[in-house]
Image 1 (cartoon, one colour):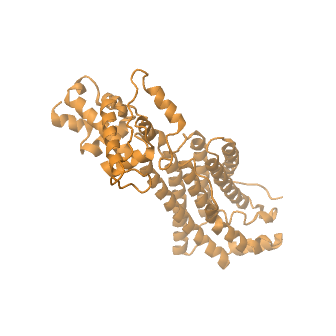
Image 2 (cartoon, one colour):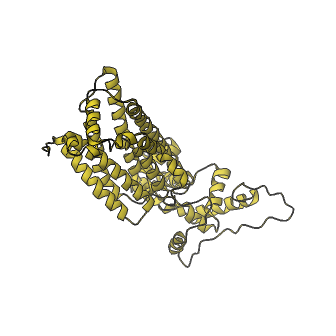
Image 3 (cartoon, helix red, strand yellow):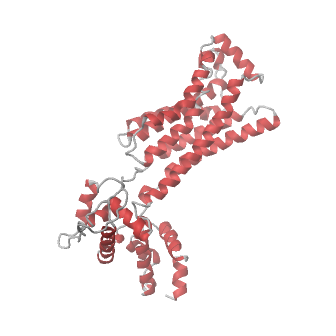
Length: 409
């Protein structure tokens, strides 16, 4: 049997492969958001096999276990699709995989089918093919697959970044604070995979330009994947639940209904706006999906303004579209349409506009002399200093301190 000798790069890769297997098991065991966790577990297993293959070649084990040769060849076609589908299901825990999602696996399956003649070779023939590859004689199908892997990785990275950007906009339709539903974890994961694909593309460009094979190129990619696995092991199991409520078709979830009731004192019940049935014969153009007429929309807008001014629910940093819809005895979707169509605002901007104006009012009243501006912001419903500064500047084109200096408060 060949003597197992590994340098530090391959030791890191081996440990990363082992951690990937254990992490996959831990993710499968998690009860929450099972679809997303199982997709991430599958990604970890794919990474582990890839890392194990780099160790396999580094230790010269091809002579002992020739049939493991080529095991990692199609795996890069899984990396992009699995991370994309993980992002889709992690961002929306109600999302389930469909038959259409299976199309993402077609390049991987095609690569496996095309490679069947190689996988069916005898051990001696596989060793001979390995020597051929090491001498620089690369079969056309392997060369084409190598380039397509990079294309797949870059395309799926862009798709996942686009998904996260879209979701960032979507959550503003349902949440007034994004701290509890931020996608920072997914952002770091996608950025990490993007860095690996850029490294792979860069190495490919250098090899093509110099027409030489970079001996340590694959090792550097394996090291980057191992680091990503370590990062996922540290952050992945500690991430908060990332989800959004289905605001378009569903009424307020029961758990939010109960929490809203607990927040309203029994002696001061929250007023509700009952939406009347349109009079017979009256013209009532309606929104396409919700069935909300212009008259109902105006009445709901007036009721919304009254609740925001009198009850000041915006002081609750966890206020959601569903909470506010419950107060108005309507659906989140109808309320969202009023905000978008009547006011031209997302829920996030609408609520934070009240918070900004409250901070401005208190600064003008001189309260910033005895209290820090951050204390005023937290009282107004902001959940963090960074969010407050960003929102305040976006609404006023000034920083909070700049606004205070401008009015001489």
